[in-house]
Image (cartoon, rainbow, N blue to C red):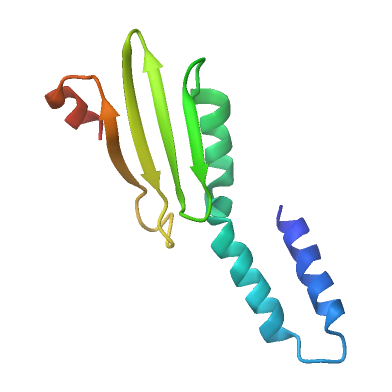
Length: 112
């Protein structure tokens, strides 16, 4: 992960050997971060996939948007939650929004 990213930056710098490199390498790094919003919480997202998902659950990841949707099913109930990771995560909280559920309204409100 971070080693691969550093290696990529070095490759970009080598392409520009003999020219100004700092701005170009910074642009490449910025583009990488913009396109991979979950780099800051990759371990947490892996934990969600491996520990929380059960058969029939769905996880849809939208890297560029910095959001993912989790649809969980259990005992005839379901809940569809959208999680949005902010640019300054973890200093700011992840935003959680209920996109749909068949739980009673007052109970569903307690989950989010």
